[in-house]
Image 1 (cartoon, rainbow, N blue to C red):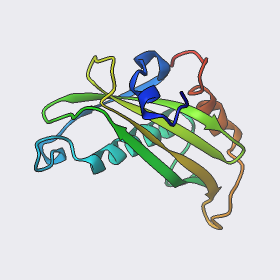
Image 2 (cartoon, one colour):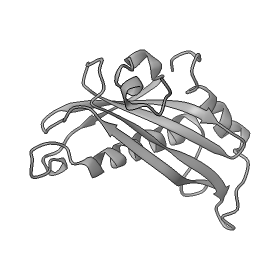
Image 3 (cartoon, rainbow, N blue to C red):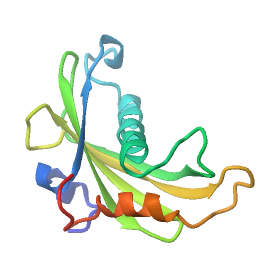
Image 4 (cartoon, one colour):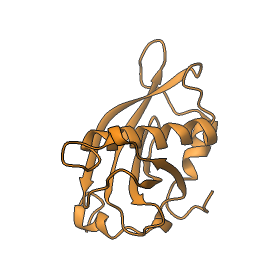
Length: 154
């Protein structure tokens, strides 16, 4: 099965994700059906990716000459999460190119081994001013390489 097959994504184990960020759900995250609203998952993806970029890939969103623009995104939902729960957001890179990177995020309930959702997106790095595609700088690329498969955990 390919990585784009939701059945293949369902069996992902925590060990596949070298970086984790915890998120304490809020009452406002729930929708009328009493589970975390699907749009909140995209906020979670953005939070774990940008936390990693800032802390481990030397990217300063307010000053860096390069910025990452999202060109595609996806999410596969497997089971609902609901306030109050703490979520563990696992992050890895599935593809690292010259000027782009594709992230995968698995959303686990705290301590769980089976994700309730798996999704991600692709960033294309562009010059902050011109918005032209630009190679990923070496410091950022080194940080992103740590999230590729077969790399040691952080």
